[in-house]
Image (cartoon, rainbow, N blue to C red):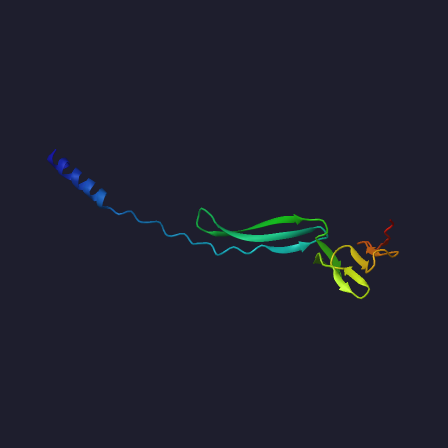
Length: 133
């Protein structure tokens, strides 16, 4: 019995002084991409962003996140490409013109004249507006 009593404290002393090894540090994922536009249409814009995540095993995986932004008249077609619309009315001799949107509008200097506002629709139709009264 004496041997057991002397070996028990030695066992506990050895267990208490053992230093556990720390797990290896996990790799940090590289920075995420900034969201960018990948597709456009007359009333929408598709955004995409790639996010890098750490898996439980410590590996890095890429996950793509997409969303669609909707708004009426967001883009207009110019030379076969969708360009972002702008709410800009430019001055020109004889009136003003808004040409950076889906509807192109020409305003006469004097709105009391016949056909003072000329509107071109996205499908190419022309509308003349005259004010009465």
